[in-house]
Every structure is written in structure tokens, then in C-alpha cells.
Length: 314
Image (cartoon, rainbow, N blue to C red; front, top):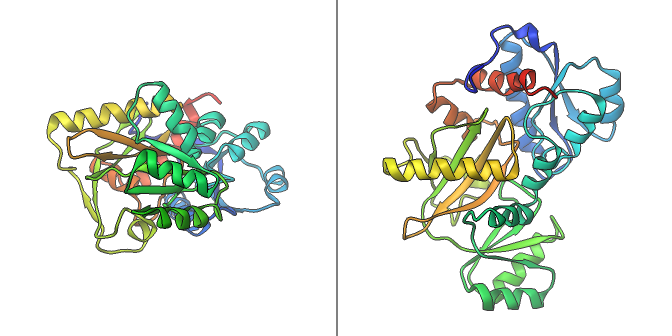
């Protein structure tokens, strides 16, 4: 079966639980993503139902008759390997990456360390646990910098800073989301996001925003964010970007589907930022855009993601 095709028989999936919501900082986005996925599956004739994941999820999974699960939980508790591990124990096939790759990809620090161990380009960084760490990072990395909670997505808790005072303030904000905080060298230049579906790299998307960076508002709320497909690169540079994305996914061990975020500097060099193993599926989301450019509508996309559970042999 081609990675960009899905089963034509919706009954082959059996009873499908769409897992969404959860208790992470990305709950509201997950609710929107989950509803869109659920509606697409049901309209395709799949016997799908939704579960808003809470503290009773173990009992709910045991009580329901579930043949496979479509994970649309963004952030911790759903994208970090914990839900994948629970489903493994329950013997329920599920979409996306397995436990280790999910846990790695959710941890921005360890993702960078794995990429660096494979010789892949990612911006210079430091970890912050104190104001003294902020001072050292400012001296070693220089400004501007970008501060990130290591285990959050959707740009939650992120800030670009241009001074030590701003860095300390951003660190104090970031630790309210995650005790592990990462600070990276700022890469000035165009941003790209590239989706992987079933081992194939979809058309890259070039991003443009009047915001300081592609933040939460630019991702989910703004109407002035620019999405370029084709992405604006030359054929050679686009091929380089696709190859880098494939290497980044392979290094982490992701499966099924994912999205990689990349910056390009003034010299044309690409820099890997992070990888998402349960990307957004809202009306502002990027994987559906890339899928459309590859010839798949939203329903075909969700069926292709779900079809992977039939062939991976979990």
C-alpha cells in the first residue's frame, strides 16, 4: 500500500477511538483537531467515536470495545509516549510513532542531542535552571535568542529576547510551563515546515508572519500568516530540505506521520528546530495544507494516517 493511499474499505478499521483533549497546555487545540478528525472518519463510513481523555482513561479503554486508536492528543500526556505506552499495554493498535520516538520528539533538548549525534544541523543552545545560567548563555550564545519550554508545543511559553533582562524574564515565564527550559541561538531568515506521511516527504511549506516569530497566535488565530506552496526555494534547495527532513525523522525513529520545523539562515543553510509527532489538524494546521498540495483532501489524509495501523504489525 502506498504511503499516500488508504484502505478503501472503512469497515477494515473496526471500531476506532479518536483520542483528543487531554490535560496539556494544548488541550483546546487538541479538541479542535480531534473533532475534525472524528467528523472526517465518520463521514468516510468508519465506525469512529471520540474520547476526551481524562484521569479515567484506563477504565474507559477497558470498558470500550476498541480495535484501534487515532491519537490526536497534542503535548504531554498524549504526544510524549505515555498514551502510546498505555495503548501498547492494552494491545490496541494506534496511529503515529511508538513510545521511544514519541518521548524523544516531545523533549526538545534530547531531540537536539540526537540530531547533533547524527551530524545534523540544529542551532546552538543552552539549558536554563537559574539566573546564573541566563548570564552564561547570554555570554556564550549572544543575542538575539529564543527561549522555549522543552516539553511544550504550539509555541507555548516561547519568547524571543534581545537582552539579559528579557532573557531572565522569559526564563521565569517558561518555567511556569516546564522546569526544563531551553534557549537557542536565533536564526534570522525564512521558516519552513515539512510533513512526513507514511515515510514520504510532502511538499514543504514556507511560512511568513508579521509577528516576531511563528507564535501561537500566528499558528492558530491570525489571518495574516502567509503559507507558501511551492515554498519558494530552488529545486536543488528544496530537495536538500526534503532530504534533511527525512534524516531528522529517521534519527528520532518517527513513524506514520510527523512535521519538522526548519529555519534557513542568510547563507542558505538549514537548521532543524523541532519535530512534532502528533501535529495539529485544525483549519489553520499545516499537515492538511501539505497533504492538499500532494493531492489528498482532509478525509483522505486521516484515512491514510489510520491505514498505517493496518500494516505496521503492532
